[in-house]
Image (cartoon, rainbow, N blue to C red; front, side, top):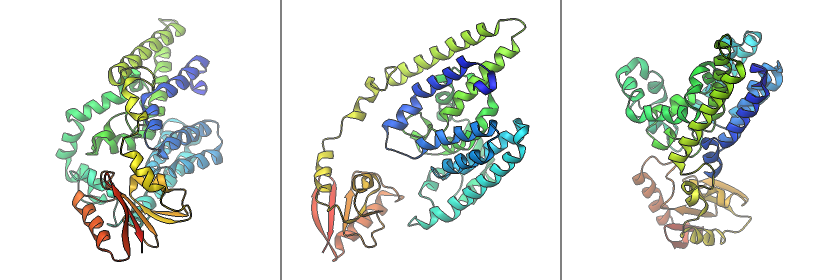
Length: 365
């Protein structure tokens, strides 16, 4: 930010906003997702670009892409930003477009299908209105323009745009070029049928937030330049900063009943469910050197064992740990999940070692 505006104040404001933005709190308070790391890597890639440190830019871009499958699209759009708006690094921008698109193709067409029971990404079902396959979804603007327009303009999508813009007082709209890198993530969340993706909760906005903040700072700097012949630059920056902070405070008080991560909205985050103690007791039965297959939401609790598979993959697992009230991933329906659990119950090579409060621990005979 200081590189763009030569303003230490705006640079410090950007850092402060990054630390107090609700998207950052929620990503940290929610289950750990590598996207929280990817946000910093992508910003560092931009910083290395404007510093003309090309190798470092590519390194940070690769680190960002390792954090989430769609980040390749975001790296490609970072390259598009360089091509369109930062001419000294056009060649680097073209390289980033190529690297990002290549990674996206490999991630979506090769890696994800190889590790999914169905052979396709579990998350495609969130875009069912657009099509039943990745190709149909990508061609939806051509094949189903009416559906695309209806989704983009629906009230809950408009509300999502408000969630992105209101904490920063709408000022990111004055720096739209800085939103290019996160446009793929915004569109994926917009078209998703999964409601939490269109909030600042969980981790879905963690990679978008830093670029919203940068766009707001770009916008304040641009506004100051536009009005410099009429109003002192420092006055414009001061008024815009006050405007921004008022909106940030109002949004957080309205949505989260406070301006700190310890506000009433977050209290349940710090209080474990009563049934969690049961799950922990069952986990303690699994030997530290065991090979385990566990349900998606239980894998972090068995990650210190010798090796852990995500159920329904069992392979050579000696123990299988399930939570019938937990996440269904990577299953697409409750029925499909129940069928897999019942098949395991009937499997003569396994026996139930413990079952309570929805948790089931199987042990190989």
